[in-house]
Structure formats: C-alpha cells, structure tokens
Image 1 (cartoon, rainbow, N blue to C red):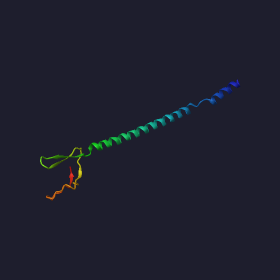
Image 2 (cartoon, rainbow, N blue to C red):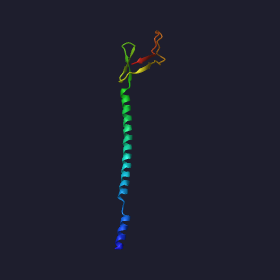
Image 3 (cartoon, rainbow, N blue to C red):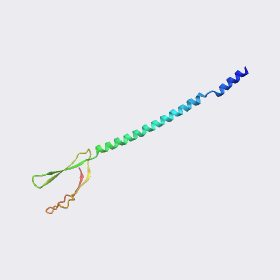
Image 4 (tube, one colour):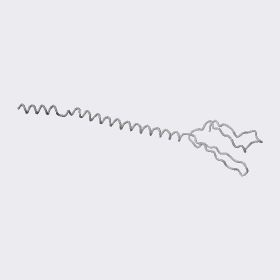
Length: 115
C-alpha cells in the first residue's frame, strides 16, 4: 500500500500545471494580436497619407497658357485656371530677348494677384 501512495504522490508532483500552460498560451496569443494590430495601424497611416496627397492634388490650382495666332502677326495668350482653387501671386514675364515693345511703354511683365 505504501508503494501505491508513493506512486500517487509522484504522479501528482510531476503532473502538468495547466494554469501555467494556459497563461503562457494567452501571452503568446496576445503578442500575436499586438503585432497584427501594429501592422494594421501602419497600413492605415500609409492610406491616410496617400488620401491626403490625392486631396491636395485635386484641390490645387492648375494654370494653363495657350497661344492663339491671329490673322495678322499678333498672338493672343489665353491663361486659364482649371484647378478647383484660386491661384494667387502669379507672375507673367517675357524673357524673349528678340521680342520688345519699343513703341509701347507697357511691359509684358506683371503680377497677377489672384486668378
């Protein structure tokens, strides 16, 4: 009988502590959950940055200049803003050295406040 009691005590001392195993398993699962949540957060930040850049591109002014010849030797400039916001502080300059307004005191250089 003593041998049976010793065997039972030995089995109880060497038995697995399930609380420790389950706690360790929960720690591992929580670590995986934290890692996945961090990756989702980084992906969301990248998406928000891309959307902000797209919104800025959609809302900015886009200035285009077209040159139209006349039947005579004159040319007309058509300046248009095709963007969704106002373009401010634009400068229009003529840097062509061959083109001069010797008969006129007006210069092609001017500053446009808003367009």
